[in-house]
Image 1 (cartoon, rainbow, N blue to C red):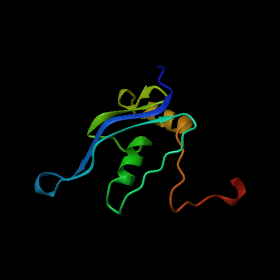
Image 2 (tube, helix red, strand yellow):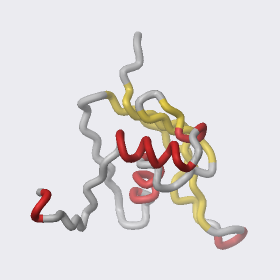
Image 3 (cartoon, helix red, strand yellow):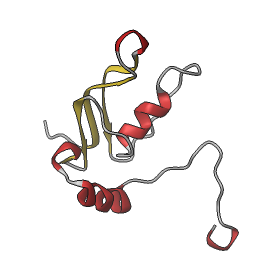
Image 4 (tube, rainbow, N blue to C red):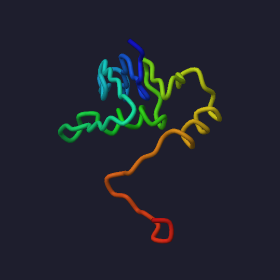
Length: 104
């Protein structure tokens, strides 16, 4: 079966802080999103939703795990490559969005 995923994440981990103060915000999360599929990330405050979406959107680097956007592994790109991919392939509408009237 062909893989039609436009977004793949495997075994994502992100920890903030060190030692006794360390907080694992994302712990071994995997997902796959097909073209045209709608996905919602839900959970209580502090559960890691923003951290997960920030990693999927190439705004934050995971401590471990892999992310592929349209077949391109983010960990293999340099900073300018990630910026180019973000400009062409990734978009966000934030919870508190500020759209420009002239462009909306």
